[in-house]
Amino acid sequence: MTAPLRVAVIGLGVISRFYLAALRDSPAMRLVAVCDSDAARLAGQAVPGHTDHRRLLRETRPDAVVVAVPNDVHMRVCADALERGAAVCVEKPLALDTAEGIALRRLAEHRGVPLFTAFHRRYNDAVARLRTECAGSPVAEVTVRYLERIEEHAGADGWYLDMRRCGGGCVADNGPNAFDLVRLLLGPAEVTSARIARDGRGVDRQADVRLRAEGGRARILLDWSFPGERKDIEVRLADGRTVRADMLAGHTGFKGSLWHEYVGVLRAFERCVRGSRQEDGGLAALRFVRDAYRLEEPGRDTERSIAAPREGARSESG
Image (cartoon, rainbow, N blue to C red):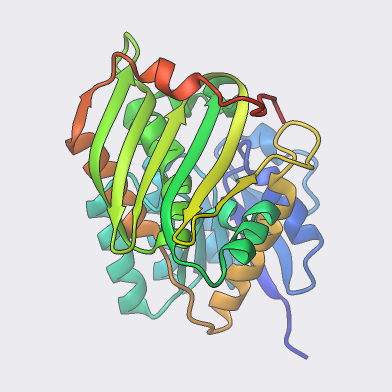
């Protein structure tokens, strides 16, 4: 019988609870340590806690780590783990920019250590059903809506609203998850235009990004000022059918869908560590963010075009 992977979680912010719950229930992984620069967050943990990730790596020597720290320290923490031979599952985005992402990918390849980017929405149950419905017919067009009020979702993690630490606003934060869904359904895609609306501090709060792929086209609608939450996908197939997936449907409570999605993340990561080749879209997502900002156009009318829901659409928090 294969021994469970010994896993450490580095970063105990708002997303960590989903990883911790998935690890608790995983037969293939065992939590052995946690780390956070804020010692107060270590209280009550059932495993040894550290405030220095390098000390954790040195003393615990985990098989793998989950990196859920702010975006601006992804590079440092991931690189330290890879150098010590620990497989890495890092929250999207892979790094703060493409240069850092390329450096991490090269380091992982040089060390022969798995580097896995977590795009939790691809493991959503409604997305799985949509992919089944699409089977047998080419996808012609994809629209992904990712709408929320960021202040409600960031909680105590105020770094989300600091562009220097996040890497941007809604395009840098929600964009990678939405783009990963486009890639999942259409394959490789490139940005053709981006209308972006910014607030008085220059933070991008809304975006309408158009993309093209070999077999079709896509549109990504992002909003950090939406009253409630709406995250869905609409797919037009070559045979004329239109299929939809509401990623929040059937999941009660705030962020309710994330519980099962992070179970899927860790299952995929475990397969990656065990040697099953896993495609990683971390670099592709960073290039999406880079290209959306490069092609940015003023988005004076973006708020109206994004926020106006179609008839019967859901608008809820949870």
